[in-house]
Image 1 (cartoon, rainbow, N blue to C red):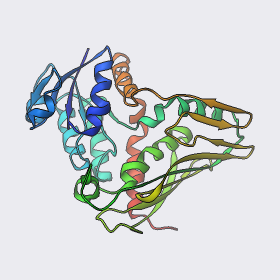
Image 2 (cartoon, rainbow, N blue to C red):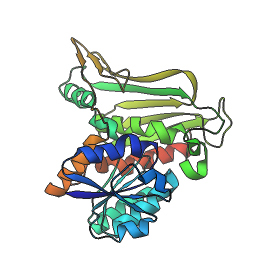
Image 3 (cartoon, helix red, strand yellow):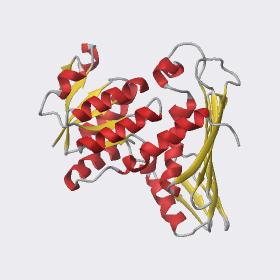
Image 4 (cartoon, rainbow, N blue to C red):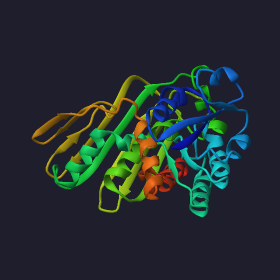
Length: 311
């Protein structure tokens, strides 16, 4: 039984993380770190006021870090050094140096560390990888992923996302990171990346749009375009090859279209469930979770894209 501590009892934790832990037979919600007793009240778990108190308990085995991004690195590193396994919300960190430090700490302590890039675990994405590996569209040469939505400038739900001191960046960090991870899962090792960010509509402290171009070692190219200034919502994912095209649009939906076939593959009822199950499985077989294998590089590419120049 894996005893979990959850730190940061916000929207993601209450809607997805905590229900995923509670539904996994090998896991138990052991404690919640929050200064607000009302947030812990609905759960039959200990309320802990500080992370220091939580990680000093030898009965706690794993920590889920669900706080704003600026806290990810210090809280993950503290938990790893205390001997706990860590699953951290995305994006991994504020910058490359923090990301490297988190990975190095996990390696040095021998603890399991992963980041919650859950879209690679979508059954539809897993099936797409099988078909791509089988050559259903020939040699894949170009993938285009977009996520467009509207996020206004007035304070509201999760308004901390507009504060660079807390979030690190805007849609590049928040929604592009998921799609970059899907590309890494499908196509392997990136060789280089560049990006362009600007504020085309909203003048808040983070960018309101970002476009990232990633080249992979076999000649494959991925383009990720994310925007917080579109009142037309888009969630597109198309992959083009020498012999055809694959369409996963919308990425968060069930439909998968490819040459000669169309499948409807529903997602998991709780998209965070596979993370918990995989971490439990990793502890039994002493191997890192799939997300950890590319996550350091993923975030380094993302953070480099912030400062990269088109060339």
